[in-house]
Amino acid sequence: MPSDDLFDEGLFTEAERQLTICNSCRYCAGYCPVWPALELRTTLEPKDVTHLANLCHDCGDCLSACMYAPPHEFAVDPPSVFAEVREETYRHYIWPHRTPGRLATGIAFAVVCLVLALLSWLFTDRPFVVADTPGDPYQILPHTPLLLAVGVPSLWAVGMFGWAAARYWRDVHGRFADLLRPRVWWTTFTQAVQLRHMTACEVPGRRGFHIVLVYGFGLCVVSTTAAAYLQNVLGHHPPYGYLSVPVISGSLGGVAMLVGGTGLWLCRSGSGFLWALLVLAASGMLTLLLRETAAFGPLLLLHVAAVVVAFGLAPYTKFVHWIFRMLSIHHDNLER
Ligand code: SF4
Ligand code: SF4
Image (cartoon, rainbow, N blue to C red; front, side, top):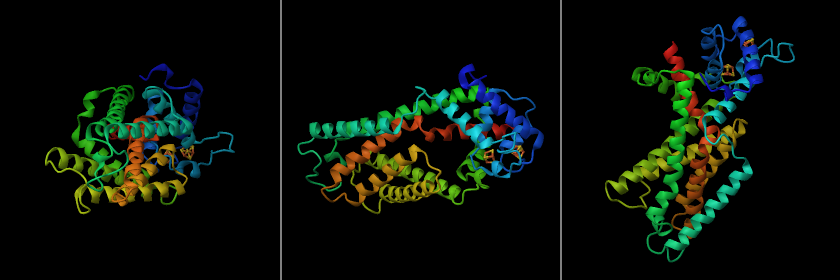
């Protein structure tokens, strides 16, 4: 069972009220997996509402179709109540239970930029200037401080995601052994990468832009991994050629993130974290395009600062939703 403070009691009562009406109505049964999952439950506990809320993709179709939506006196609005429950989920399972505002994020970015500039000044003779090899990041910031600057927030994010995932699964599902079901995971991953449950989204283009953004992010991870392999296994140090795997995958990934992120923003479907991803992609692309100019040093530090802030704050932003969504899809597939 989830801890008692998972929900504000009023929120759970309201969610239970609305979903009880839905369970009698069942008009939306074919819209998304939320409704068949709801039909399996005759009574609702906080863990059920948490699971259903994280299974919802917020497409809005049920609200558009609902004859009991406001101004009807039943005031049924599942997307809104699920969105509130998801916010509670994120706060409950991530520590500390806080979401940084724009001001705090801006201050964090400024402080990280300052610290990186100081490190560059401490560790190099001519900060921000590449003396010998154009595009060599280690002439701006040596390997060890650069690795620590990016590695510490990344490990923090991964650790926090894992901790949240374990607690969420324990509360909502209970059996850790069910995490070791490769066939069900294959179905889950297939559905997740296709964003299959978002097919009926009422906002045109939202699903497509979401896919482009996610795949772009994946290509950037491929780029970083390939660069690490080239350097640490094959001993090839950066900068890498324009036709190398890190540069090609990073360029395609950066463009995809810019296209997907801008599209989602135009669909009015973005969160604060979307801006962090856009800054990340734009600074990365500029760093690559201008790597043989004097702007390379400052741009690289800005890009690294964006990476540090985005990874460090990722668990406290909407980015965290992928963990709970994946686990809820997996739980749903196991139930079926
Ligand atoms: S959202 Fe409205 S139409 Fe859909 S199941 Fe609930 S009450 Fe029925
Ligand atoms: S908003 Fe969309 S995904 Fe969420 S419950 Fe309604 S139909 Fe399903």
